[in-house]
Each structure stands twice: as structure tokens, then as C-alpha cells.
Amino acid sequence: MSAASGIDHPRPVLVVDIDAHDVQQTARVVRGADIYSEVIGGNRPSTEFFEREPLAALLVGTGTKKTAGLIQELRQRNIPVALVGTEANDPAAPHHSSAPADVARLLHDSSIAPYLLEELRIEPAWTTDLVIADQLAKIRAQVGKSRLICGLSGGVDSAVAAALVQKAVGRQLTCVLVDHGLMRADEIEQVERDFVAATGAKLMVVDARERFLTALAGVSDPEEKRKIIGHEFIEVFQAAARDVVASGEADDEPVEFLVQGTVYPDVVESGVGDGAKNIKSHHNVGGLPEDLQFELVEPLRELFKSEVRQVGTALGVPESIVWRQPFPGPGLGIRIVGEITAERLDILRAADAILRDELTSAGLDREIWQCPVVLLAEVRSVGVSDGERTYGHPIVLRPVVSEDAMTADWYPLPFDLLARVSDRITAEVPHVNRVVLDVTRKPPGTIEWE
Ligand code: XMP
Image (cartoon, rainbow, N blue to C red):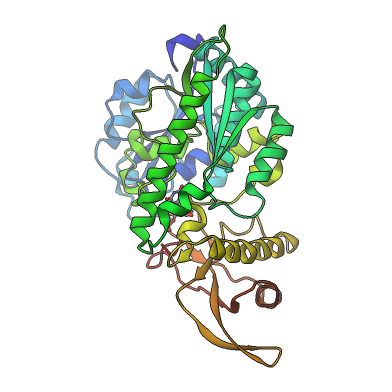
């Protein structure tokens, strides 16, 4: 909590990472009970524990080091301690046997809420209304009368961050949406029309479609594509930011802040919970460099995805954005295997729109994590249509379920849905004469094809 805001940080339940497999899961369960939680590495100096004034500490994981000492120190300060998981469901949990016998042991996630709410009588005060009120006050305190810009991607995080800032300081905010031409059908319109209508945000859409196509002409190597898209994106965004800075009226305050949709898992993965094992291997293309001349405003820093969605819903952000599945920054550019051309983008957009339409009709949007649709633009196969020979391209469907995109499993879409999607894509999308299904786990396959 920055001193500038003047608001006390909510006292957390600390979720202590003792070489845990999935410490964020425990932190999410606590949040699910409307209690604020924070992840902290078990090897951090104890001052870092105590300065947060925790309401309780949950020790998660199988590491032995320091556990007994930590329990003792916490107890000396009257901080209730519980161990999450036991030898019963985690035979590799030696610290549990070395911990004092009277330390609470929570065998399953379902015992966490009763322990905190009923046994410790912690007040369930971390509600969506409180989160919003708290963030509005923090944003106002941080930015004063200065102007801000926010890059929108069409995704949930940037949209909800922008909606919060818009509500806090209204027209001091300008949103910038770079149309790189690699979005899916309707995505730009959803932001231009629905997001603006719902939030009243000032939006500048930069049409950079030609520029990206030109820069990508003749390139088929995936890494090269990612580099070009990332580079062009930064250039275009920076130029747009300069325009916003210059566009102020004479009596306007300067643009000093950049709004970013950083969420709590990003914060944990960048080190606070010692969660180095979770760091994503690929460079986050579609992000911004750190040396932009702005101070960051990050109103979602404390929130998990489900909380971001609750806040977005409460602020009236359109459902199509709040519930959008993950979509990569380089967009359809890394779903065309081969060179990216305007025609190939149209083909892929049409196929993707059919798949998404059918998933929505079947009520499966929230069931799966995401379903990339991939165009194998440099593969052709023979087919037949209306008695004529065709020589077209395959479309790949890649439905996956995942918790965090680090690992994933393929999702068994119902046969009747697959049949409909296949019939529709081959009938409605020109140059496509085959639909194939990707049934590969991650690892070894990544979710995206490039
Ligand atoms: P992979 O293909 O590595 O993808 O299994 C994991 C998750 O990350 C998304 N993804 C990206 N997201 N910029 C992004 O913002 C990127 O460059 C990027 N590459 C992959 C992918 O859609 C999946 O959710």
C-alpha cells in the first residue's frame, strides 16, 4: 500500500509458500470466502510477515526448512497458524510431522473457509463493492488531476482496469486500441461500440492494419513473426501515446500515467511468492516496454482473474469482454502457419467465428480454457465439392482446458458439435476443405501452434 493513498491495506491471511505445488490455489480459496489473502515465500525474512499484520497464516507445501521455527515465531505474535494438506494426501510432507501437534491441519480446500470464518471468526469483508471502493480511492489519490492513457487489447484485464480508472477519474483517461488486423471477427467493434457505451471511456482506435501486413510480408518463421508484431505494436502505441499527450487542451494537465491490467498472478509469478517455477517461458508479445515515460497505475494488482471478472461485471463491462477466453497478443498472426496475408486472415477469421458461434450455442464457453483455430496455410490436400476436385487448406481445432496455461489437456468436444463445426467450416469458408482436431496435451504441445 503506497503511503500516498492514505488507505490502510486490508490485513491479509498469509498463504505461505513452503515449496508448494500450487500455492495460488489456496490463496484463491481464501478469497472465495471473501477474505483477503496474500502469497508470501516461506523463506522471506520474518519482518516481511509481521509488517503485513496477518490475520492468520496458512502454510502450504512440503518443504521442511524453517517451518517449525516459523510456526513458533508466528505463534509468539499470536498469529493463528494452520497447515494446509497433510501426510494423508501428501506423503511427501515431512514438515507436518515436525510441526507441533496442536497446529491446525486443514486436510482439504473445503476446510479452509470454515476454519477462517467459524473458528477464527475472521470477517468476510473482501467483497467486490469493497474492492471497487478501495481501488477508486487509490486511483484518485495516485493520479490527482493528471491525465492517463490505457492500452486496450480487447481482453478482460485491460478493459476492467480502464473501466475502474474511468469511474475514478472519468475524462482524464484516454484509451488506445491498436488495430493490428490480427484480431478476430467483431473484437474491435466490441470495444468500440459495447465497451465505450458501457463505460463512457474516451477511445482512440489506431488503424495499423496495413502497416502490420507490410511488415509481415514474406515472413513465415514463428519467432520472426512474433518479433515483428511486438516491435510494430510498441512503435504504434508509442506514437499514439505521443498524440494523446499532444492533444490536450491548453488548460489540461499533462499525461503522466499509464494504466496496466497487471493481475495478482503476474505479481506472484514475478517473485513475491518465490514462484519462479511458474514463470512463462515465452516473451509476452503484445506487452509494452518498461521504459515508457509514464508512471504505472495498476488497479488489478491484488486481484485474481475471477475477481477481475466480478469487478468488471459490477462496473457493467460487457459480458463478451468480461468472459473472453485468453487470446494471445500477436493474435491470429501466430495461428496462420505460414506467411500472413489479408486473404488468409479473412479465411481464419471466418473459421474461428464459426467455431466460437457453435461453442457459445452449446454453452461451452466457460467450460473450456480456449480453443485456438489454426490455418495450415502452406499445406494443401485434395478434396471434392459439388462433384469438382478441390485443393484446399486444413483448419485445425485446438480445444484445451487448463488452470494457468502452463499445462493443458485437450478437451473432448461433443461429436455432434464437431460435426456441425466441420460441416459449416468446409461449406462456408472458401479455400478450406478439411477440418482436423488437435488431441495433444501441453506438454509436449504448446497451446498455440507458433
Ligand atoms: P502456449 O502456446 O505457450 O500459450 O502454450 C500459453 C498461453 O499464452 C497465450 N500466449 C500469449 N499471450 N502474448 C500473449 O499475451 C503472447 O505472445 C502469447 N503467446 C501465447 C496462449 O494463447 C495461451 O493462453
